[in-house]
Length: 71
Image 1 (cartoon, helix red, strand yellow):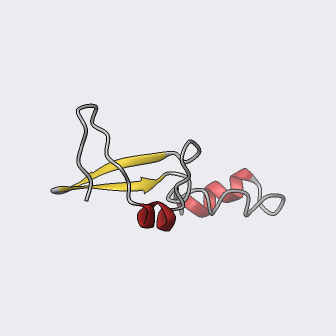
Image 2 (cartoon, helix red, strand yellow):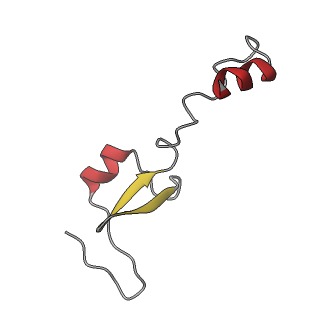
């Protein structure tokens, strides 16, 4: 459990930082409101486009990719 400071800061427990791969001073995180609670996400690992980036490099044209994703 963390107490929120007057500056709105709270400590993220080490086991959660380790689980999410959060490194102090390096990791970009985001806070997402979901119904009645807030979720902390590592923007680097939870970007849905990160895994897809570069997979078609040299294999498909932009037009082919656009046709595939819009059909």
